[in-house]
Image 1 (cartoon, rainbow, N blue to C red):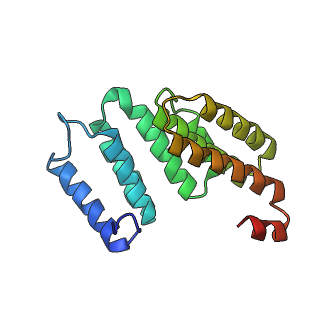
Image 2 (cartoon, one colour):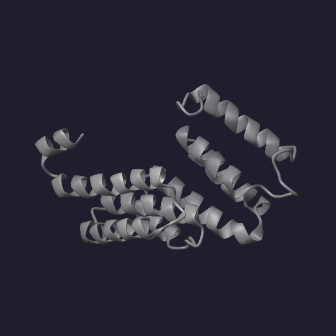
Length: 175
């Protein structure tokens, strides 16, 4: 509960538990680190703005991922780090290397892709990417309705945000 609220002490303790669990092989499954655990570590470290720690973690623990999962996990997590460091062109570069066969990577990579285009003010590309994301969501059967609606709302509001970005009074209304 404290972790979900972003409490620094709880997040720091969670990183300690992850480090301990990896070092003692407790959270490894048949000698491998699950990609979800790998990604969660990165999320927690980024919430603490521990950029050096997370980059060290990725470098030192990538070999614990199954080879078939390694490249996606590394590139997605590096994209996430670059996004938090506001290195949006780097985000695009890393996301370009992610294989979107996995629905989780597909959906979450698109979030970072859209947000990066927005930050880079690549409006034409962003508009096209939003349209593509909406079509993808409407066609994708493996995403439950609640999550699909949340993502469609994100796309809808991002599109509105782009259209009113330079009109402060409209931005206040949208907020």
